[in-house]
Image (tube, rainbow, N blue to C red):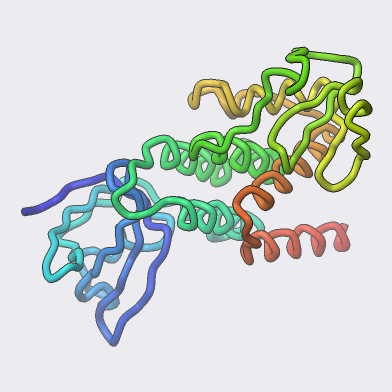
Length: 258
C-alpha cells in the first residue's frame, strides 16, 4: 500500500554508490526515514525532491520494516538558504531541534508549519536571523507542550507589575514583590523583564500561527528576548546543540569583521 504525504527533507545520507536515505518531516507521521533507490545517479527521477530543504509530495511503501520511496514531486526548495552560511547554520539548528523532539508516528502538524514558515522568512530575507531564532525557540517549546506560564505572577497571579522576572528553570513569572520575598537573585536562570519583552513572549506563545511572525521589536529588546528563549530551550530540553554552537561562531566572526 502506497502512503502519500507532504514532507520536508531535513537530512540526507548517501549509501553505497547509488542509493540515499532521507529523513522527511511530515504532519501526519512525524519524522520518517525513506530509502531512495538510485538517488545518487544523475538521471535519478527523485533527485530534485530528495535534496536537503526540499518540500514536496512523497509516495512510499513499507517493505521489511523499512520505508522505500516510490515517487516524489518537488513543490518548493529553500535554495537561497544554502547560499548563506549563517542562514544555513540557523536552519540546521531548527532542524536539529525538530529531529531531537519529533519521533516517527507522532503528529507534527504545528511543528511542521512553524518550521516551514521560519524557513520561508529566512530564505526570503523577510525577518532577521535573530528574530526568527527567538520566535522558533519559544513557539517550538509551546507546540511540544513545554510552554512557560506567562499569564501572570505564579504566586499572586498579577498580570503586570513594575518589575517582572522570568524564571527560566521554573518556566514561570514572578512579580518583583514575590521575587524579593523568595530571596532570589538575578542570575542565569532569573531574568528581569521589560514590558516589551514580556508582551513579546506572550505573543509568540499564544498568537495564531499565521500571526506569530507579525511583530516588530527593537534591537535592545531583541537581545534580551534572544537570551531568554535560548536559555529556556537549552535548559528544558537538557541538550547542547552543535548546530547552535556553529551558528553562534558564525555570528561572532561576523561581529569581528564589522
